[in-house]
Amino acid sequence: MHDKKLCKISNVGSGVIENALFADEDVPSVELRDAKLRRCLFVRIRAKQAEILDSSFKHCVFEDCYFKDTHFSDVDFTDSYFRDCNLTKVSFEGCCLWYVRFSRCRVDYERILHAIPSQSSIAVPLLRELRQNALQMGEKNVADKILVKTIEREKEELKAQFWAISDYYRTRFKRTARIKSGAKFVNLTLSGLIWGYGLKLTNLLLSGLFAICVFSALIAKFGLFVKDPNCAVGVKLTSLESFYLSVVTFTTLGYGDFTPASALARLICSIESLFGIVFLGFLAAAVYRKFAR
Image (cartoon, rainbow, N blue to C red; front, top):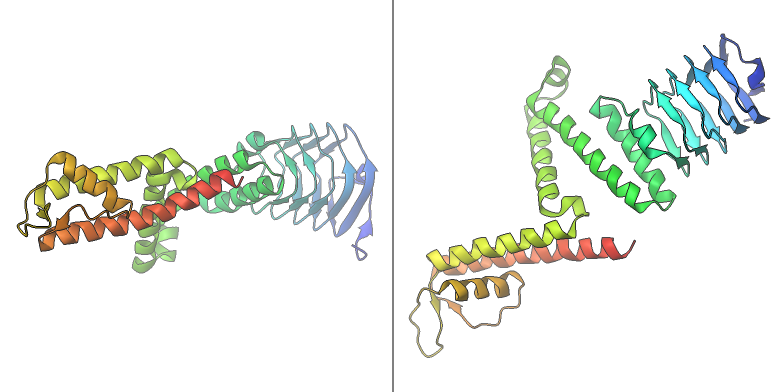
């Protein structure tokens, strides 16, 4: 801060200003046009209902600033940092928000999400910053919504990498990297379907029920089981018995009512038990996340 020259916003013209300090100014309804600022520091600036047009604030830091109801139009904020700022009801029309960071800011998320870059590789870091800011401000519901948007944009980028949709991707991502991107895409897609990226407990319960029904059908179709301990002969189970056995196996209760009497039956039950253990881990994580909010 000490190596920056102190300047006034009222003196900002159309020329380039670098390494300047703007501090403790109250400039309501100020209008800036064609301002070009680089590596500047703004501290405790109150610019409510300001109009900032066709300007750039590259590599700048904003600390404890008040921009409520301010309108930014065609402003370049590349690699800038907002910390402890009030950005409620701020509009970013046609602005460049590449690599912008936020920390403990009051943000109108719906407005800023409209200014998210179209490039997924640029949008994802910005969305992560917004989600982290929402968590810092205790806005868990907003953070969850942004998480879903972040993952959807990540999937778009992974799909572009896998299919190498342009020369950029074909040059940068070779076969191995593309396969990894495809695997990550599948993993995220399954995560969304199975438990909504950890946000939808209902999805997870339905996924568990679906797995139980699938294994129940496999048990009824291919499994031989001993029902009576006094008889070692394996028999087919009824649909109801198969469903019951699938439930106790999937939930790892294992009452021992039925004993597998064939290699295939043992294999089916073993695989279902593994699925059940994984499911219970996901369930514990989802329940903790939901009630630890």
